[in-house]
Length: 153
Ligand code: ASC
Image 1: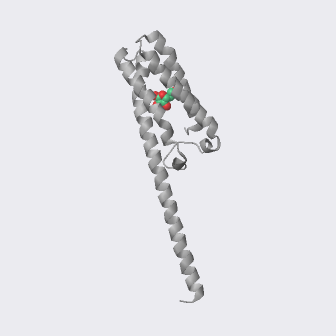
Image 2: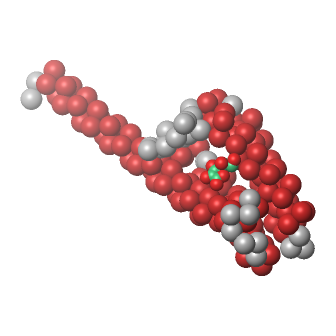
Image 3: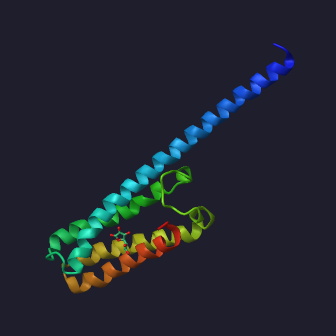
């Protein structure tokens, strides 16, 4: 092999290796997104019946409400695990890229949602719908505030 051809072969091999590393990186990010979305599925699936009870679309069951509100708070606390730097760019995702440019603001919204979720779980312990209703509304608003800014429609 001439020097020139050797050089080209080396450059091509390096290119393949780098492309391989990029693919591995992408797959890792995609896996993080999958993990993250699974958390949101569990969270939303437990949040939905709370909404139905608060709105009178489902009979209010204090025990059931408290159980699901506890799960929502638990999942909310787990969410940051799905928003690590490794998850950046993972697909398919509705996360707006702005999250990574406004990380402090995003984290603040996430923490606010976590604190509202804990408050709802606490409020649900006494089983009084009139105490639960405002706490539920505050949590729903916290979810929406973040979605409006950082989630694609
Ligand atoms: C849900 C759900 C959301 C939030 C949001 C609350 O049940 O899937 O994204 O509540 O609509 O405002």
